[in-house]
Amino acid sequence: GKVRAPTHIISTISDDRGEEPCYAGVPMSSIIEQGLGVGDVISLLWFKRSLPHYCTKFIEICIMLCADHGPCVSGAHNTIVTARAGKDLVSCLVSGLLTIGPRFGGAIDDAARYFKDAYDRGLTPYEFVESMKKKGIRVPGIGHRIKRGDNRDKRVELLQLFARTNFPSVKYMEYAVQVETYTLSKANNLVLNVDGAIGSLFLDLLAGSGMFTKPEIDEIVGIGYLNGLFVLARSIGLIGHTFDQKRLKQPLYRHPWEDVLYTK
Ligand code: ACO
Ligand code: LMR
Image 1 (cartoon, helix red, strand yellow):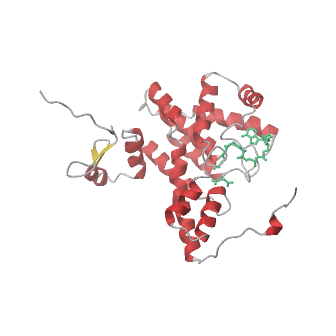
Image 2 (cartoon, protein in one colour):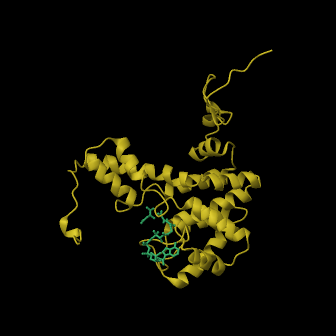
């Protein structure tokens, strides 16, 4: 019989050996003929299945809403400084991407983990928030440097509107909103932020679409797929900031002395 030579790599998401590349078994020509979009490509390459249109539209809305948030945020700032140091596009991009993490843009997975655990265990928002406080952990998905209870994040409102209109259930998002109501009673900056909105709504997408088994949902949340949405989205803006600085021929950046507290 045939003897299968051992391989060094296993891959399950795409195949380029035939006449045309296939994403999760779907030929490129079919993707183009059906007029599918980047949300569909993400669903094939990340989740290995075709998701219903409202899910792929939601993914695309996340990408559009998170593509940029001005020059002052951590990622754009790093990218701008790097571009002004004369570095190449990839260096500018990665220097911005490297700031994405638990405080900035990379709280989506943890928001999904903590909201899911708290909701599934039936914790009230009070019990959840206070238990996090006891553990000394900031609630991921809550808090913002400039957004406030009386100056909400429009991106969060847009995501919520889309989900309330199109998702079969938004139970995790409604739980996150209840958490926000409680945290806002403590301080005005403790709003549900865009990471928390995406994290809770992606739980609703995974649980409500009927496309994922419980173990698959646990695996997606456990591995941490969702920060990938912010990384992908913000790359668009960071690339834009790189081109902007180069177009403007901005000189080497040096931070002003006056803005540093030199002290012993
Ligand atoms: N949960 C509980 N308490 C909080 C939280 C939170 N998420 N955020 C702030 N606080 C409270 C704490 O008491 C904090 O005091 P501490 O430093 O002793 O912990 C106090 O508010 C002071 O916080 P601020 O100075 O107002 O917060 P800051 O502006 O430094 O931080 C930040 C903003 C980083 C977003 C913060 O709220 C946080 O860590 N949130 C959780 C992570 C998160 O969701 N990040 C994503 C933000 S959205 C984005 O980047 C796209
Ligand atoms: C962002 O999308 O970059 C932000 O929400 C962070 C910020 O401080 O604006």
